[in-house]
Each structure stands twice: as structure tokens, then as C-alpha cells.
Length: 465
Image (cartoon, rainbow, N blue to C red; front, side):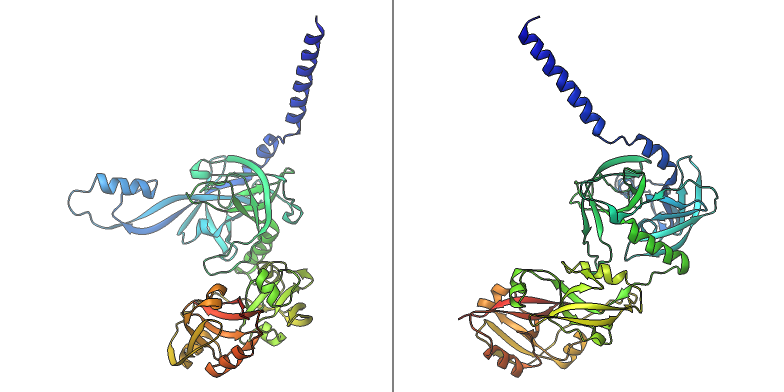
């Protein structure tokens, strides 16, 4: 045997050993799946409605196909029917029949059917649901059910392996795995609310996985699969799960009273970018910038003002504006706590008694024009705001932008915006607007508070030399 052959054989042996060692380091999910699959369920609902579609069609797409290519001959009477839909997943959290899933899985359902992996099907009662966190608790009449073990999402680390079990596209008990990509992700709802610091993963999650468990390698549930980020409706490498720590706080309240009580501060906030940090005297962008303080709110009672930047709440650092709703919402109603803010470049501490977040109320706000116009050296032409419009917006005054150019346009101000504060001074009418503009420091960036649509926000306006 030649020396060259000996060397090649040694290299090949080392390569095989290295590959074998690497394989041994990869996680083996088989035991985890076997021990936890019995506690995972498929959830379908029945909705009673009127339709001409044929009963039992498995999907909207098939119903549309039959409607287009096999139209009924003559008029078919509209008859009520119960339409089953396989919507998502869930998991048993207590052996006496309590099941956790997403609110959007069972929302508006007339009947809820839970199917176990032994093919049993049981009708479930909705114990309570919380749309703000997208969680729902169900109860089936059964005993000695297999349950999952609950872990601590707080102890999860980015890069850690996680695994999901669910029913994507109706394929029951499908298993997918990946890693934790990030924690504390902010995903505002259509009402611009954000009370869940989501876990981001690259686990393949698709329609039907919603409400299913996310496991760590110890076989503990650390999250509830809830959302995907997708342009196609299918998995694109980014998925989001509700942390189990947050979920169980909701579960206990839903079981006790059928509703969830959350802490409420009573402010409208926005992110602090680099330009705004400079205008407010911060050394770096951080905190939650207060754009509006609601009347008769805990924030108003504590003395918070528009332009304050909240940097700590109850000992929790507020790095991003999205951090604030998370910590406030989880604070006990009626609890007094400290609020650290930056006002006019100086830090101060305020004491605030946390209120209770009320049920959501949709508001329709409009604008009205009145009064004369005025121009300014920062590229703005404004007009007085009608008293009725100010009342609808919940403000004491302001001016409405009718034309914008130059520095104002660069700042992002647009026609129709209502200006309520400029350089930390309140704008009540045209006269106060003119005076504040005259006093603006040349060559510096100043904050301007606007209301656009329903949302107040600060912009950084650079005053020309």
C-alpha cells in the first residue's frame, strides 16, 4: 500500500467521522413529537348561513369553480346550511379539557369541533376570547386528556431550535422545525394596537398551523403559532408566535371572567428616529415619544405632556416605542409605578397610577376649514382650524396646512396636516403660529407635532439659516 493511498484513506476516514459527529449534534425530534402529538388537536368550525352553494364544498375555491362551470339550471332556492371549515390547530393545556388556540381560528363560529389524533371528535365550548392578543380558550367535556408541558418563553434565546406541530392546509399532525430568529417583534393590528411581543422564527408555518404549539428541545411549549409574513399567503421564511408567558396570563383571566383586563396609560406614541433624537436633545434614538395625552387618562393625571419621551416604565427600559404597550398592558390595573421621561432635554420621574384599557371604540374624525391663510419662512401656508373640527379631534386648537414647500416638505409635512405644536410650543391659532415661527432658531432642527388622519406624530423640521 503506497503512502499516497494511506493518506487518502486517512482523510476519508476523518471526513466520515466528522460527518458522523456533526449528525450527532443535530437535534432528534422523534421522541418530542411522539410524546406531544396526542395533546395537539385540529380545530374546525361550523357557521350557519344562507347560500346557493352546494353543501359540504371543501373550500371557497371549489365553490367558485362549481358556480362558474356548473351553474344550476333555473332558479335554486336559498336554503340555510351549516358549512364546516377546517381552520387551524390547538393544544390541550389541562387534562380536564381546556384547549388553547388563536381567536381568529374560532371567531364567529356557531359550532367548534375538536379532533384528536386518535380520531375522536368533540364539540367545544368557547370559554373566552381576546382579539387583542389573538387568543381563545376552549373547553371539551372529557377527562384524563394528554396535555403539553408549558415552558418559559422569557428564557428562549435567538438561535435556539424550535418545532411546530399543526395542520397546515388540513394535513393533520405535520411537523416543521427551525430556529428562533428574533424576540419581541412588534406587529400592530388594524387598529394600531400592539400588546404582544412576538417570537419570530423560520419554522415553516402555513394556513392551518394557527393556534398550534411551538416547542423547545425540552418538549415544552414556548409559543402559539399565530401569524406569517407573506406576499403569497404561504410560508416565506418568517413566522410569528405568541410567547407562552403572555398567553398564560390571558388564559387565567379568560378562565376566571371570560375577559382580559389590561393596563392603560392613555397616550399616543411614536418611534424616535435620529432626526427627532437631535431635536429633543437625546444622545441617541430611544424611548417612546408622546404625541398626544388623552383627556381624563392616567397619563394626564401624572402630568405627562406631548413631546415627553418615555424611557423607562416600572423599571423596564423603553428602547423602542413598541416596548411601551407590552409592559403597560401587563401591569396590574390600579398599580402605582414610576415613569421616567425626557422633557426639554432633562430627565424627570413621574408617578402614574395605571388605569384599565377600555373596549375599543372606533372614531370618525374629520377636518373643516375656516379663517384666513398665512405663510411662513419654513415653507408652510396654513389656515385656522374650525372649532368643530378641533372638537372632533379632541384638541384645543391648531392650524391646518393648505400648501407646503421647501423645509416643510423635506420634513414630511403634507397638505391637510393639522399642526398643534411647534418647537415644543402649543399652536392654538394663526396668531400663535406666526409668533412661534418668528422665534424659531435659524439653522436648527425643531420638532413639529402634526395630526394626519387620526394619528398624531412628531416630525423634525430644519429651520433655514
